[in-house]
Length: 151
Image (tube, rainbow, N blue to C red):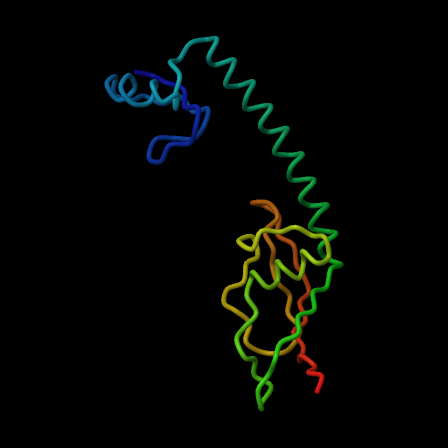
């Protein structure tokens, strides 16, 4: 049976693809869960229309993400941490710390979008990649400094 996929399905195809599957698989799984549609001319037009709308929406999202990434390029985040004898940090700077620092500057970014390979455990300046869109990554300047203790 030929069907049109409404969503991406692993090992089968992407949204909008026309694929041939077993009749039972289509009738008992894909069609009742609205993961696919039978191939008809009306359904083809509907899926093509949805695909065009999705492309327009995706292009607008990408353009907005690029503008946001450009504005993030001028942002500098300064985090103060306590240090030991040889200027080693007590603890580390994590993605959550960076997200919190950005939030103080009215920039709301989910900590999972901050691509920090491993926590930062030293003083210095770093360039941190932030994924603002699946195709757009911005760089945020991070400066880790000594915390000044008032005695």
